[in-house]
Amino acid sequence: MKPSGHSTHRRRDGQRGQILVVAVLSMIAMIGGVALILEGGNAYAHQRIAQNGADAVANVGATTLAAKLGGATKTDLDVKTAMDGLSVSDGLDSYDGYYTDWQGHLLTNGGSLAANTSAAAAVGGGSIPANAQGVQVGGTQAFGTTFGRVIGINSFNASADATAVAGVLTGGVFLPVIFPVNIVDCSQNGDIGIGETNWSISEPGTPPVGQEYIVPLCKTGGGSFMILDLDGTPNNCADEVANPPNLQFAGFPVDLQSDNGNNCAKQMMDEVNKRRGQVVLIPICDGDCVTTGGSHATYHVIKVAAFYLDYMSDTGSDCQGNGTTIVPIRGNGSSSCIAGWFVRYITTGSVGGGVVSGAGAVGVQLIR
Image (cartoon, rainbow, N blue to C red; front, side, top):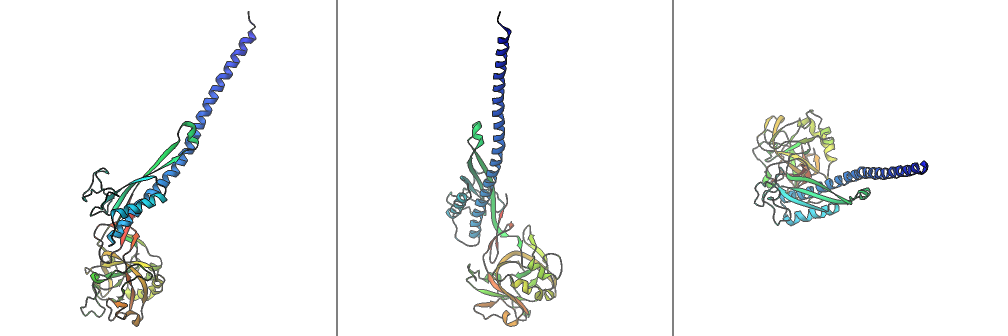
């Protein structure tokens, strides 16, 4: 008979071996769990990078289309080149781009609605559909793992989608004045002045290269230049210029109420002139207005114009112009005016349907 101590020793050695195996397996599971947690945080960070990259690429594509809407010559190659450049600088490894309408619906090469990306007109396909006003982007970024390699995961892919559109600007920070498409001069002699179709658009510059205009401030009937009440508080015009509300309209036309021009013109002048050398957004109305002697008016706004501001003045000589370098749109009898250049302007803001024309400003909006 063998001593019992030998059997006990072997059992203890076996138990120690089992415990070691369990400990190793537990350690591997714990390392794997920690790895997944750490890699999850890393994946979230790269997901944000991919989303920011997709947003940026979609925005630059829509901005290129906005320039085309504004009259610039832009091709499919221009759109693709702009998007390619930003995709690299913003960290995307690859992206797919497709043209959309102003609401973000995919378009075929012929301009009709596409059911899916397989039928949609691709950026880089050679042409821009006639009614294209936006791009849909799907971007990806591959990134390596650190702790994930312990459990055999060497890399992940982060992917993100974005759509940006361009079109008629329907929202933003407006100067609380309004320009009619046909401005009646202040003496009300029936002269409708220089209509919007004759407002020449200046080229970019400081100041812009082109015709500077003087727009009269007067309180005639329908069709006059007027001060707007954009925040619902009467006679706080200086504050509306200094701290303008950000308005978002569903679309045009829309009705806006006027403020009291007599009370506001001098109040707001200093604040307006602090914006000299800036592009301001100004509502444009048609002749479908309701006024009572220039006060308590309702203006029928049809678009937003971009105006590079030179000055506002209540001095007669400043408001007459010289007929050449500074041309009054009209203003006989006006006591004050705003001078500047109409410019083609692209800015971030809500977008609506309709054709960009005349002095209309163009918006670019990331919609998803």
